[in-house]
Length: 168
Image 1 (cartoon, rainbow, N blue to C red):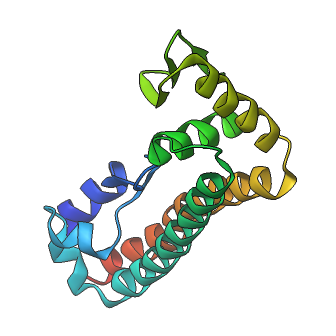
Image 2 (cartoon, rainbow, N blue to C red):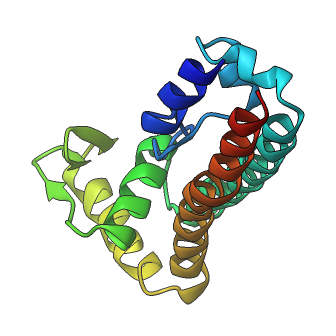
Image 3 (cartoon, rainbow, N blue to C red):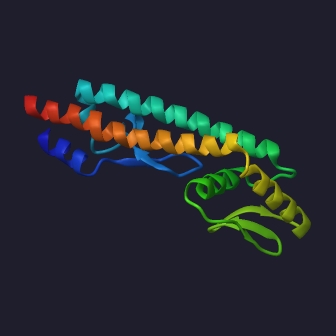
């Protein structure tokens, strides 16, 4: 058991949050299907994973709110998941959209494809949304919560596993 604990502590498994693709520590379901599943026999580890699961669920709820809010503000139908991903990344990391003759994209993701006039309408709407404090703060909240998952892993899960190692 000690080797698997050391392996986990050295390189904890990760998963990506839906849509925004933020890397987070694996929760219970992810651990169940990994080589670390035996760690679920450690009660303190399992309890700390419940916190990860709860925070992940909260983040997913906040992502769903972001998607709904962005979609409701669009003048026409866009690729909502790509819009949410790009909006979050622009707010938290930076960058900007690329305007083509018939596509609005961010990195390699197409947010909208259509007539140039429609494309510009979507772009102008996004530029206005970037000024909305509520949505910018929602992105900050998602980032903060995802960072807190790593803090929890580094402090509480690490401690729980080190204590279990000391007992075995």
